[in-house]
Image (tube, rainbow, N blue to C red; front, side):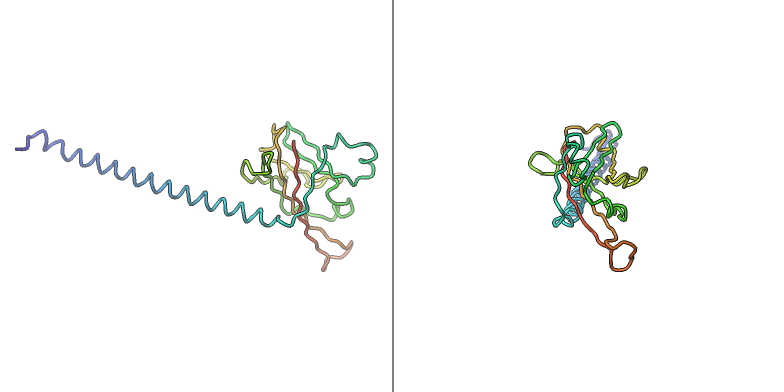
Length: 183
């Protein structure tokens, strides 16, 4: 025989069980979506970085370590890092006459560890508030670079320029660079 109390409590227990079941289903769907998003994100990173497989590899030296002769000649790749603002300047990646006719099409940064494996996410380092080229240097900036001294980064650059001065037909060139720096 079912008591009156059991008759009153039974619908409430069924409702509680139903709510618990719905919450579990929602959590499972959210976990599946997160896994799909992460897989899609990893594929996008791989596709992006696969485009830089044939890029010119550069290991610039810190600008302040160059001798006066190396600075004057201007053919040694170098970098200068400003940790408070998160700015990175790359010098002598392209000759100055080509750089004056160039456009920075894409600039991505990836934090790496000592073995060259990625640590973080791909970050856009293309400047929006400062000019990309200034005084023969390529300016890069991102909030992730701020106060990041001591970390290693691989910067991926795509630079498009007109190889023939005064010609806008058939002279457009695109070069890709992978630059390894330790800030």
